[in-house]
Length: 440
Image (cartoon, rainbow, N blue to C red; front, side):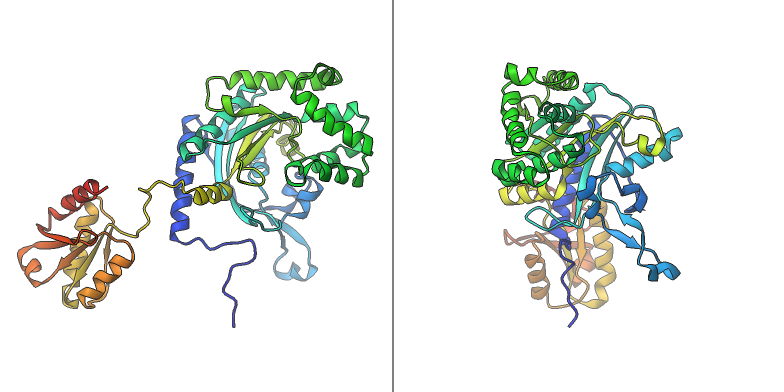
């Protein structure tokens, strides 16, 4: 027997799932556009060389590679890959379409990405990202605006208990330098630190030592996090010039979000690492209490576009994980009661198959009035037709019998109230709309 379930880590999206996703996407788009961000889309498939080397060693291993096709298939070699995120494709777009885009370019992009990761709660191999990025400026206003936009989006979705963690890659580098960790091990150290919320202090310390970092340096780094977080004089004073500059940059971002919804939710967290290797400056992550991991994250990546273009283009962005948002909103019951859960507002039913042309014309009138109208396609017994509408949650049934057809009327039955009224066919749509509003 042929297996019918989707591949592991992938999902089918049934109507209710799609409605919820489109609701969330609609809210996020509206908020991003209020900040002047423009829409962008890129192909699902990128050249493999575009993606390799942009995400660190662990990221490279999670890229879904696509084998060469046709006569080259037997080689077993890959030349294409499914996109791993939306940031690297954005960098490629900027390099390729530079002459068509403004110097200061703000874009949002909401599309699926693919990672050969281990599936878990809220973590899938195919998932949507909701990215917002600003390119062309090194000003901390960019970070502040990105954080404010993401915060506004989550608040409009109904989140109130999230935290925006803020750190800086140069601050992390400065702390590692202060502890004499060799530069060649900085990447390994950050990969370990990035797992702090998952494996805890002891787990990070153990992984750092496994990666070749001394136990003394590992313990010192974890202790330094507390010192810098508390703005302890000795801890901050041990930072080099780059670390001090990073602290000033973070302070500027915090000052600039004042007056936005991000202000009261933002906190400095020197242990935040963000595993991707292309970050160069401030990094951010959003967490809620009842979800392991984050709702999203981002940061500044001033060198990424230059890898394609050959010249530096400052950039900063944030990516919300749509699936994780949907998981939390579903578990918390955060979707509005008004969100459509039925295929139609009204179903048109007939007693005789010969009357189907009348049914389609009445349905067209109902749709023209702004209703979602469904024509029951078979002349089954009226009880069976009404039972179907009720099972799908369709609130109204428009009945067309011989008398209604002869008189140019339609009888509208409200199933839940067990009430019905007869209207002129031209007036039925407005009457149903009014009844929908009245009944909420």
